[in-house]
Image 1 (cartoon, rainbow, N blue to C red):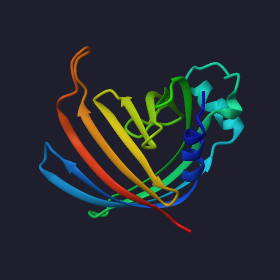
Image 2: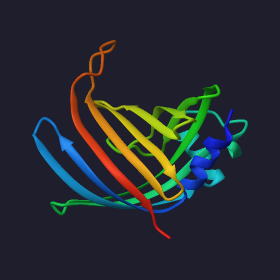
Image 3: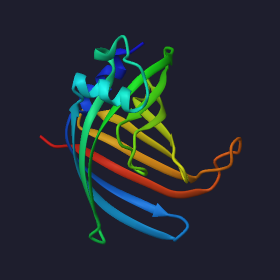
Image 4: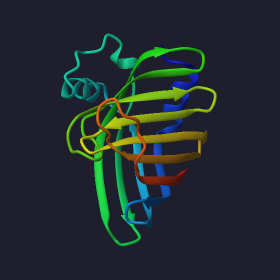
Length: 184
């Protein structure tokens, strides 16, 4: 179910990146800037199996073809707050057509809650945008990475207050924007 553009997206993302981000906390009427350096490496086959297992998924028949990363990052905000984390992530396509690939986005450790997490992803082939939606306990995080070229990505994140089941996402808590440049 993979598409050459989907595979290329992941190939281009491997490397070391620097990101300048701005976060808008709407409830606090606060704006914060941060810098992140992160390293993206292909996830090893044994770690792919571990991510599946951590998320109570059976071994995938084409596990070697699944796209994923080992991600390490270090973020420093303008207030001096520092966050460092490493995790493994895996994208398991479940459906697709000429324009999109959709499926499950699995992590052995999530950002908001330090535990394995299953989320949804949609990759839009014409724009090379990877959209990931995670339903945490308190928030729903919608994170977008658009690959402009092999050296530049644009990042956007919107965190919504998690509504009651069946209700629309309509209360925005945080909006973040970032420009990510690959380091040579």
